[in-house]
Image 1 (cartoon, rainbow, N blue to C red):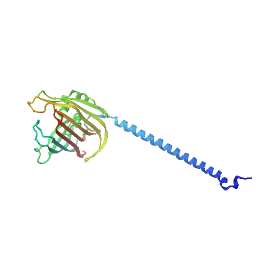
Image 2: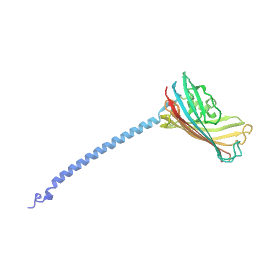
Image 3: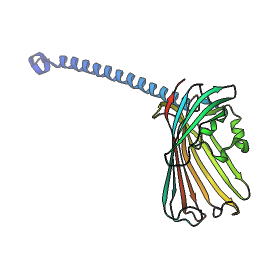
Image 4: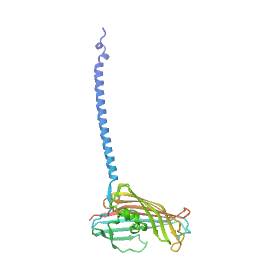
Length: 291
């Protein structure tokens, strides 16, 4: 009778089957381990995403938080460009650019419950403008918003004293990432003024490097809508009906609202939509000394 053990191939089948079973068990074990690994990895990623989302939607106190004795050095770059032969504004008739750079040093001398006393020293680019002596001034802790828009911090329409909507926003003591502030603009008078709207979007939190170091910041996007000049010609002729468009980004340090970096572009177009002039400003923290 033909027997399985008489055939070397057939006689090895049980062993092969046993080996196949072992391999299958090994593969199952590997797949099981991979499955656990994938589940754990997915869970970790999900937790990380949730933590990131929670972090991005967290609230921040609205208040300057400097320390007495600290010193901040900023570099400012300003570029004004007349982009076409101009017959409407008192500007040169040829396309040109004018750069005006400066360095601003801020030293925090003292503080009380509401304000800081600081010393400001500004040095202009050699040969541009006049020397500016150091000044000592008081900065209200609630004036953190001046770091939001203009790298120079001097936008007239962002004056809290004359903007009820801005005052209502500033009455809050916290900001949430994702908030949007829509601020109406109505400055000047019947002879010369500017109306329209500026929007601030508290976009997200970012770690950014600047020459002074690496800082955890809040990124704020600045845009405008329907910013229009009106003028009767008594103060400045040729500007009536012109549009001012602004776009920029500001980074303020979390916890202090210290200005870390900002840029802003302003584009002026005439009533026909032709670009007349462009102004670009940039501000960067280049040195920071702790107290």
